[in-house]
Length: 167
Image 1: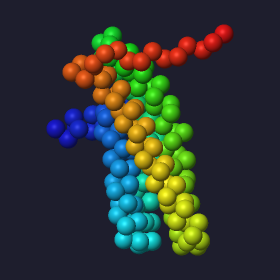
Image 2: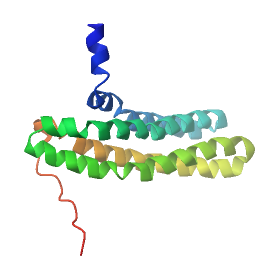
Image 3: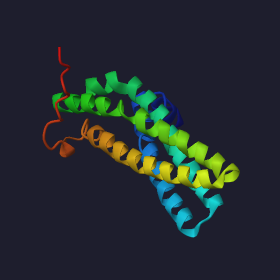
Image 4: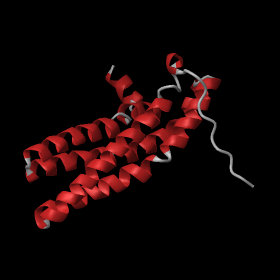
């Protein structure tokens, strides 16, 4: 039984499925924590909320890494409709770094600024909160396509056609 478990951990598609909620869930929990911290006006609690947002934003890296490693195997397991959703999921995932990483950078700068430059830290905290909310939307959008790859019960309608480059 333990051997089976460790064999499963060697499969990138399993690791991707295991980790893929982390960017959304951790970022969401960071948003909730940060909102509460702003309400009670606690800089220390704001730092904790920002740190949780940072964890959520940085966790996009292993999720994307294992997703890329798993794509071929998942493609071979999915039906034709699922393969279209896999392509859409991959296309959407390309947007993630452009939202999650800058939000993570803003969060870490805000953490540092809260202690060194409180006024700037406050503005950066609000900016990180805005970025985190945007990241949640992007994460949900990516997940929506990902859930349809192997779950035909979620496949309502075809995936959006990717825009074709103009020649």
